[in-house]
Each structure stands twice: as C-alpha cells, then as structure tokens.
Amino acid sequence: MSGINLEHISQHFGEQIALDDVSLTVKEGEFFSLLGPSGCGKSTLLNIIGGFLEPTKGVVYIGDQDVTTLPPYQRKTGMVFQSYALFPHLTVFDNVAYGLKVQKKKKAEIKQKVMESLSLVQLESFAKRMPHQLSGGQQQRVAIARALAIQPAVLLLDEPLSNLDAKLRKNMQTELRNIQRNVGITTILVTHDQEEALSLSDRIGILGEGKIQQIGTPLEVYRQPNNRFVAEFIGQVNLFEAEYDEVTSTYTVPHFIQSNGKQVQLKVAAFKEKSEKHLLMLRPERIKLSSVGEEVQPNHVTGVLADVSYIGHSLRLVVGLNQGEIIVHASDAAFPELPQVGETVHIHWQPEDIVFLDSKVHA
Ligand code: ATP
Image (cartoon, protein in one colour):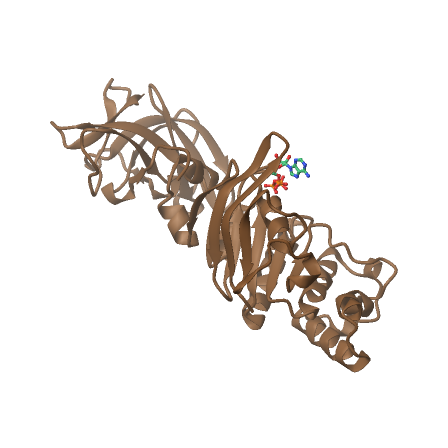
C-alpha cells in the first residue's frame, strides 16, 4: 500500500491543454475520487497515474518512488476500466489469474491469490464460469478481483460502475466501499457522478477545465464550495450576486426583485469585507416554506410557483419572483397534496445557510 503524490502535472495534446499544473496528494489507504464534467481531464490524469500516458510536464510519485516514466506493469497499480474488459474466452478463474501468470507466479500461489480475490468480491463459487454467464455487476466484480489479485499498492478505477443500471450501481457502490475498506488499499475513482463521489470518498478532487478546483471531504465540497464552478457542479444551488447595504446590514441582490418591487435582502451569519460585491450561495434544501402571516425576518421572500417537479422523496419547486427565481427542495412528507403552479408561496431560511463563494472560476 502506498500514497500518491502528483506534482505540477500538465498534459498537452497538440494545442489543447487537457491538464494544467495539477498537484495533489492521495494518502495511503484513502478512497479519493476525481470528479468533474465530461472532458475535464479525469481519465487523462488517471492514465498518467497508471502509466498509460506520460505527462507533458510534472512528476508522479507512488509511495516514495518517482514512477513518471515507468510502464504500467512496473507501477504496482491495478486498474479497472468502464468496459470491464474481461477476456471472453477465459473462465472467471483464468481472468483473475491473468496478471499473476504474467508475473510468472507459481501455480499454488496463483490459485491461492485468485481464490482470495474472488472471495473479496464474493464470487468464489463462480470460478469456473465464463464471463457471458455472469450479470453485469458480477462481471464488474470479476474485473475488480482481477485488479486486486496482483496485490497492487494502488487501485485505479475509471468510471467502473457507469455501465450498470441505477439499482445495481448503488449495490456495487456499497460493495466497492466495503472491499476497499477490507483491503485498505489506496484507491482513486474517476467519476462524473457527484452522488457516487460524495457517498464513497474520503476526499474528492474536483476537476474543471484541466485544473483542480477544490480538494476536500464530501462535506467540505458540498457545504463550502470554493467557487461557482464547484457549487454548480455538486448539487443544485441558488447563487446571488450581492452588494453589502450599510443601512440594513444585509446583502442586497439587485437581480432578484420581489412583487412589492423590493430587492431580495440576505442576512448572513458572518460578514466578509462589507464594501465589495459578493457571490453568495444558498442550497435549495436549506429553504423552508413559511405559513401565511408567519413573521420570519429578514430572510423571507414571497413568490409564485413557476414549476413543481415530484422526485419521490422530495419536491423541486421553482419560486418565481418579479425578477429572478429561487429553487427549493422540500421533503415529500411536507405535502399531503402537491402544490400547484401559480400558487403564492412564502419561503425563508437561516442566516447561517448563506455561504460566501469566491467569485473566480478557479480556486
Ligand atoms: P469523460 O468523463 O467524458 O471521460 P474526462 O474528464 O475523462 O471525460 P479526458 O478523457 O481526460 O476527459 O479528456 C480531457 C480532454 O483531453 C478532452 O478534451 C479530450 O478530448 C482530450 N483528449 C484526451 N485524450 C486525447 C488524445 N489522446 N488526443 C487528443 N486529445 C485528447
């Protein structure tokens, strides 16, 4: 087992800069996810760590060793790809044994390690089956067992669950986390699925436009995003470009006008520099619906429902103002009947729920 250290990694493809000076450290035994939109450079970075691509600039350390120019098989990494890439003509046993045979291990050792790996993914009894006799989830577990059989120092996972249907994917996420905990192996998961990254990871690195936008625990990146990019990429968000108002000690939002003609005013729990313009964030699930006539000042806004979507466990409400709209996520349990578009609604939130963002794109 080893940690990973990336120092100033850049990757150019001709004119295009896929990665721009990326540095990060993954601790030994950590489950780390690289999260970002399509084309942000996630797979490129994973391929550089795995040795499938040599970076234009920068250094890759696995443990204390500089592996930047080493081929994949000398790096002690196990990789699982999106398309499980099992050998169709080999049994489950022989698929898992493949890396060990390449390493010319003895027959008895191969058998022991293959069965250990299959036991980790609970497929010991499937050793003699062919890949086509397995479900998608089972095939993916074989791919994980194959990567683990060579006892790599690091497990690299490139969107390994994206071919699975929603329910199986959830089950596999839990299994993956359990396997990783049992083995204690340093793991990097590439995903564009924010829920997957939030639920599995010790820490997440959010990539955007070839740069690391933020690194933090799931709670940190969700509750305190560094910037607009991270806030908008993880979960849904209401963003306000606001100005400090000395008279009311609140932030006013010029682009959000209520039906009485007044700008929306935001009371915050802790001030930044009062004179500047700021980008403020409010998560939709922090907003509560108020009863008519309820005195909740000053983070109180009245609007008209412009859209209602039912998502099962919650409702997504779009509250339209004279200018601007605010998204609210409310629990299903709060509504015996669905509210209707066109209804007047009163909403409020706590000053602590307003979060300051850095308005720059990059951290
Ligand atoms: P996805 O989630 O869609 O897989 P990604 O975040 O993994 O995206 P990469 O595959 O790392 O993105 O690609 C990053 C950028 O580099 C993209 O714009 C891609 O087109 C470009 N790129 C990747 N590989 C090459 C290559 N071999 N030659 C030229 N450009 C490439």
